[in-house]
Image 1 (spheres, one colour):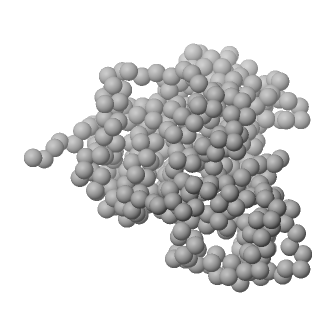
Image 2: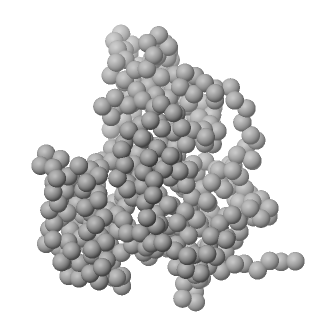
Image 3: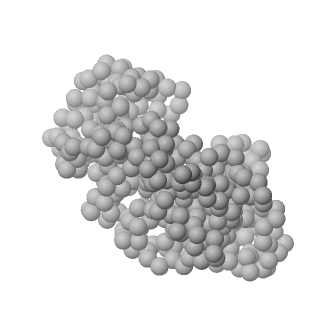
Length: 416
């Protein structure tokens, strides 16, 4: 007997996505356990070097747990080893319990069975002396910074690229050994990676038996869908272990046939959103509660790389919010600003904050605040945004906040 396809309103779909990203209700836990709970909800925390306001991973956590002591994150990474740095949908902090999911990428790079990994393998083979030198130094000395490798007398064939990595041979070799799982990031010193042999950092995984590829793929898809709340197959493909899902179409079909994921319609004022959308079976009851009004909204700014919005196509489709990072756009061509933080208000993305933390002066400088069309612009929303800006300023260590003149009229009283 055929089952009818459940229908979610667009509002319920949005609320499910926001809830599963742990962006609802009052902040309750900002300790190590709270941070670990966030990672178990979102599965990966993208790393990005730009810190116009603060590093992206700090902002993503702040949006979810509020002001927190970074020592808790360091403890989870470098003492408890509950988290580690590896490549998820980008370079990220990921869960150690998810290590088996990432082994597939490590093995692909070791085997050289993709165009890029084949190029890496070829370069590494030509530079075997540098490869052996780095591993010998780590074995002899223990954890080391990249600048501590003195490769004088070794003349590697340079890595050639069109970008900043061209000619950076020691750094490139370290990166390739890392992505292959031979070495790991064992710590950070002054923001720089401290490298060590994986067999010393994660000895439990060196010879561990892994589930079959099909089982691993099913588990990874389920984790990604639970993190996203509601998603198409294309959304899943670029989340968590981006484009590394084994036979994704077949995996999704098996999960649907088994009833572990459920196809849903998303109704937008009588029209269904394009695409085939899925919800995890475990989240259907939550979706039902959200549809009945069991909902605790939150107002918070988001990192430009936040997991909720990093899939730009999904963000446009689900939230009607067109977001582009303008960091690399010439200043005179930018529409909103260099480092813009979207504003989440309940289940809507209602605006953007163009700002920068002036560390030298200890001042959080809010240059522009933009409001989207057809969103709440009353004074109460302005006050909620102001409170969130003040909270962020306190988190990053700003002593004062300076607002520019470009603020929506109805929010101006609060944002000045």
